[in-house]
Image (tube, rainbow, N blue to C red; front, side):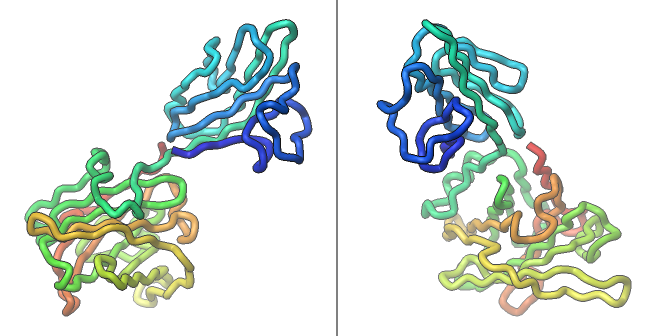
Length: 288
């Protein structure tokens, strides 16, 4: 859950005056005849807290065409967007507070929690391999404004030292990127390769350039563009998670990308595919 408080990074309230205070405010410092509120956002569900000292009736305009008369309402916006929220309190006088609120999808995936159990809650963007997946059995995908999250299950061990390769068609257009033989529907602009299920992970990013027979994968200099989370062996499977930065790799802020994963063994021979080989990859929509 993320907590968002507007108008000043040094205060814990939303001010209803034209100029925000420059000093740190306490709730006891709030003037008697001004309206104040704070809010916390969990994806698109927002909890508003009235902090006004004025008592009376409350009218919330959520900025999406809906209102509430509750003192501390909870509102589900249902989609990302920018919303002007206004609280009007009518008592012995009428006072008003407003702020612009920006909402975007948040992911429940945490890569630093030492577990993969948070992936149990991901029921959308799940791929179960068929026979052409070979050694890769399952994949799950999620995203937020900052990262694309990836979860993989494959029939191997940590000691096998498999190599993870990720191809991304940034614009979902076949003709503008590298065309994979294993995934005929993908024209990949981005390619990532490395070992992530290991105590000493490495992962390199490449960008497609050229045209026709004059093409190449050019190494991209991008710091902290990925994160590796937890990995474990369980039930005869190697399970692991990682994330790719959407803001540090060009083209990943689009509302849709097409993904293809090829896992190789430690001799660089094909071990498995996600989704199945000879498909058009997996279309990940990121427009929520």
